[in-house]
Image (cartoon, rainbow, N blue to C red; front, side, top):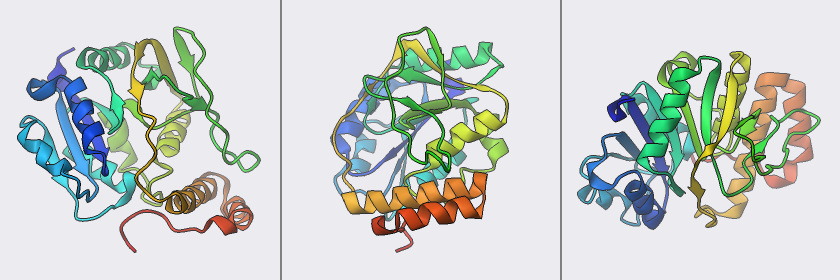
Length: 253
């Protein structure tokens, strides 16, 4: 597997130090991977990292358009055959990224692959009866097939994302990962977490206000349930979570 066949898309928001460490982990300034950073309107110097990482393509947005829209911008700029969608607080090295791509190349039955995290990572897909199942640690098995994973590091084939057109932008910050996982399930392929490849997911709190995140999560969950289970499921969930608000993070406010 040649590194130039792989793109890494990172969405960043007010985490300049985490972003710096993530880029250094990917092999510093001389990485052969195509790395695309989409910054969601940070004012913490994140965009200035382009001076330290000249091989990285930076796209600076004027404000926070939410994770989903920023991911779509990064995906459109990706040129590799495989795309790793990566959060800005994840540390994974270049050999591990290449190993993920090699696994996908050799396993046509698999639609996406993830490294193992040092934190709860897998769960069932949301349903009307269980709209927000908790994440649990990945069992210590060589390959774990999961319905849904945390969206911090997911590698997929580029044609798969292209076939989606884009990640549904009814989701703001929350929802892009569960939508990708659902589309993989609908395609009849597996979503695999590999025990042999590990990454470190940062534990720092989100720089966004907790109230905004709760409202965005409620909106994203309602959008997912409405899309895949019908309007009634979405309405019932909205009525149960009306006290959480319902504004998605997408830059429109």
